[in-house]
Structures are given as structure tokens and as C-alpha cells.
Image 1 (cartoon, one colour):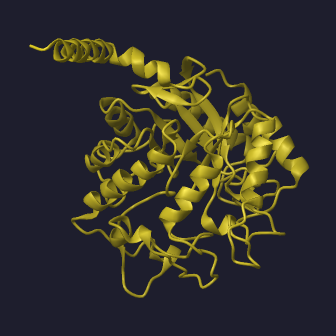
Image 2 (tube, one colour):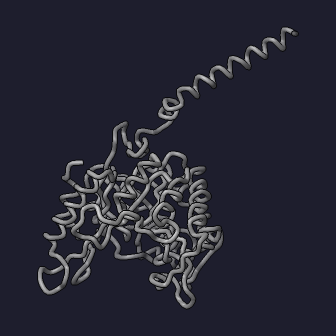
Image 3 (cartoon, rainbow, N blue to C red):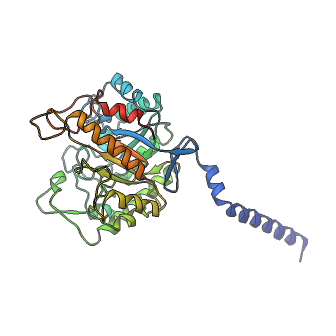
Length: 384
């Protein structure tokens, strides 16, 4: 054969050999691309700074509230309160909060305005903490007022909704995802992304809207496919914009529509879901609650089989005055939650997020956790 062709052939073979060798050491090649300062996962373990990572933290959904700019959701923390909050957590804790479009739109001009969300990221950065921003809400509360039904998860997220008539959702959900991810993907405080809080692909019975749909859902046969499709499409969108950070499912895990029993595995098998979730309410005296179909132990097992970590993303117990309220005392709640924390980490959960931190608490029985609550000390000091 001609010499020039021969040289090109030998060069092509050499390149092919290098590619083959690289693929043979695929695990090492992938590990080299992981940023050790970003939360990643290796099988069912989370990783940070080159070591297995387990975390405690809190939900503080209201952090993005900034009355001078946005419509808010929950009480507003001052800058001093934000610093005291983040500074009082265990280093590299995780804080989950609402980053819905209504918290990123100016309530006067109805234009995108990140001021409220920026101050949360800046405060977390100052104190070396990690954030889990949630970009939409299943029932539309503090968001667009729209119940996310099967049709929404099957593609309706590409449209705008303003069922609460506030006019604060100025772009479709997918456009909001792009805007938020592009703005914060380089922040040292970004921990993981969550597309929707407590997603379930149920239809709402006629005559009910938004949060009133709870208790009036109808679960269509195509619900699992719609929910899986959502993560395949929107998850891929997030990964294209930010391939470094993990995506959390946000599922309750208790057998909700679209993720019942083995359907939970089907949804979490999406290549764009990195971390499985459960929310723990109602079985206060059981460290690892649930039944043989939708219990926490089953969910941990399912996540492990998929090679993915699982976190207890929300856990709450109502507490109030010691007598006459029907709920436990503050000390009693701390004992129950500490038992759950230890039991769930021992069972295989990789994170534990308390519901819900705030500067003030409601009267009577409440899930609210004040800065002085003894459970805040437990979260900071419990060995992991």
C-alpha cells in the first residue's frame, strides 16, 4: 500500500489502542474527572473531599424570602440571622430550601430577580455549608399554584402556569431550571439539585386545585412512565448545564402515585437521578419506619441495588407544651429524633434533614425547630 496510507493506518491503530486502554481503566478515568470539592457518589455512598460522606442538616424552606423583592414563603431571616444559622451548623452540612420561581421573581416588576436567592448562597458560602435548592413544588404552594399531574410530568412542564393568579411564574419551568442552574452551578455552596418537591404523577379530581388536591388524587396507569419521563428529560437538561452536581429525586417514598412499591426503583433507575429520597412522618417511635412494600428499609435496599445513595430528606415530629396539646415535649422530640438519626444512618441512609428550621415557631403542636432547639446541637455533634 502507499506509504502515506500506511502511516495514516498506523496512526489510527495507535489512537484506537489508546482509547481501548483508557476504556479498560474506565473507573480511574472517571474518578479523575470528579471534583473532590463537589458532592459525588460511588455506588450507594456519597463522597466529598475524597472520602465517604454522610451529613446532617435541616430543611429551612423560607430562606429565600426577601420581602423587599419577592413574594416570599415563610418568614424572612435577616443577614445576621442567616450568618448565625449557617455558622451554627456542623461544617459541610446540607440545607434544603425553596428556590421556586416565585422566590426568584420581583413581586413588583414581575421580572426575574435573584436577590433573595443570592443572599442565601452568599451566606452559605461564607460558612462552608452546602445547599439543596428545590426548583418546583408538587402542589404549587409558594410556586405557581398548579398541581403537577400526569400531563405535567409527561411534558406540561414546558408551559407556564399561574393558577394562583399572582403572575409570578413568568417563564415555563424548564426555562426557570436553566436560569437557576446556570446562575449557581459554580457556587461553592451548591450541594445537589432537586427539580420538584415530593413529586407524584397523580391527577386531581374535578373541583380541586393546588394543595386541595391532596386526598382527592386519581392515579392513572401511565403515572410511573410520566414520572420517569420527567426525570429522563429534565434531569438530562440539568446534567447538560451542570454535569458536576448530583440530582436528588425528592420523592416521599411512601407509595405515592407513580412510585409505588417496585415503581420506586423504575423511577430511580433513570440515569439522571443520582440520589434516592424518603420523607419520614407519622411513625414517631419507629427508627426505620414503613411496611414491606414502601417502608424505609425497602427503599434503602432498592437504592443500594441501583448503586445509588439514599437520604432521609425530610423528617419531622410535632412538639409543643408538655401537657394538654396531644404532642410530645421538646425534650421528648429530641429523644425520638436522635433515635431515628442513629437508626437510619445505621440502616444505610447517607443523610438526615430535619423539618423545619425557622427563627420563630407557631404556637401549640408544631414541626418548627428554633435556633435554640436541643436537636440543633444533636445535628452538630452526633458522630457520623
